[in-house]
Each structure stands twice: as structure tokens, then as C-alpha cells.
Image (tube, rainbow, N blue to C red; front, side, top):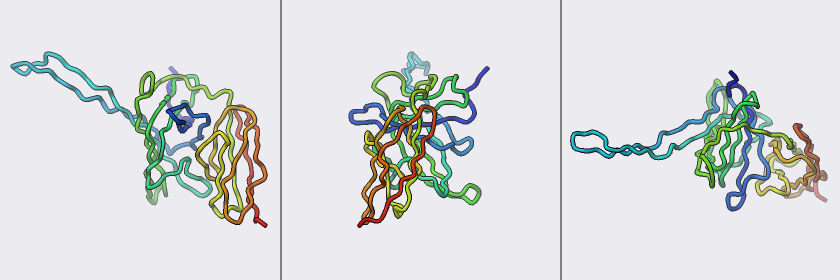
Length: 226
């Protein structure tokens, strides 16, 4: 019997206006061992009792769910999503593909995402991301189905000489990414945009071709203006 255990592939995507599905996804680095979890909370139980204490009827509210994982923070690794004291704006979809991609994974169409930063001497600094699952427009809150990532690939932009403040994004995205964040999108040509940095000229390379099943890495260098 093939099980959905082992090293997963996780991708998250920010929903667009009106809850539209993401046009691109963020590749999540492999989480800390045994930190990736989907936890249900059983819906509240309502009992209709009669004299004597027996139940005449019982009704349950819908279960609620949280999905979580932890990432180690280290040199050269940026947070996949920016936060302010753990608060992350917008709503996110999540896809998890098990180590065996032919078995059912997890699809969450809608969730509220938050982050907690921890530190201990055994593991160093870690980022714990929690997704409180929200009711989608259709179907179950958590869908268990085979997750297929074919027809798309990843783009990683590594920025230098930016003073640590340069950022990038695809022309189809709203949110900026830090250097080293890896984005997953449909194969083909894409346009890269860079954030303004005072006293610097933006990197020259503004296009790339995403290849199916591959990671394309772009070295983007800011230069002194004038």
C-alpha cells in the first residue's frame, strides 16, 4: 500500500481580488522534520435532551482545520512571505504533494496565514507558518486529491548589490519577493520587475523563460546610479 508520507512538496499562492485563484505560487523549502501537519478540530456537538438525560437528537457543526509547517532560518534564505509581527495580509491557497506524487495530497483553496518566529540553541531560528482554513466557494475546506504540478516550473531571482532592500516580482503579481524566493508559474516567457532602490539602477534582465519541471535561476545585480 502506498502512503502519503515522506518528504512533501509544498506550494502556496496568494488569492487575487474577489478570491480569484493564484496566477503564481511560491515554492516552500523543505520544512523541519515532522513539522508539517494538518490538524482538525471536531465541530461543536449539540444535543437535544429529554427528561431522564437521553438524547433525542444530536447535531455536529462542521470541523475546522489548521495546516502548519516550520522552516529553519539561515543565511541566504528569505522568508517566503513578508509579515508584520507575524501578521500576513490577504488569503492564501495551499497545495501539498506527497513524496509519492501518485497518491492523494492536500489542496486548501482558502486560508488565513500567520507566522511565529522561534529560537532555541538546538535548531537556531525557525519560522512557523500556520494556515487557518476558511470555507471556499465550493467543496470541502480541505480537499484530498492527487496534486499535479505538470506544465509549470520555477523561477529563482538572486539579487546583489542592493543594500539588502532590493526586491522582485513577476509582472502578473502584486506582492514583491526578496532575493532567493522561488516562484512557481506556468511555463513560458515571463516579465520580471524590480523594486526601486535609492541611488541604484535596477537590474537589466527583465525577462526569463520558465521551463517545465525545472528551476531557472536569474542573477540580478543593482548598479550605482549616475
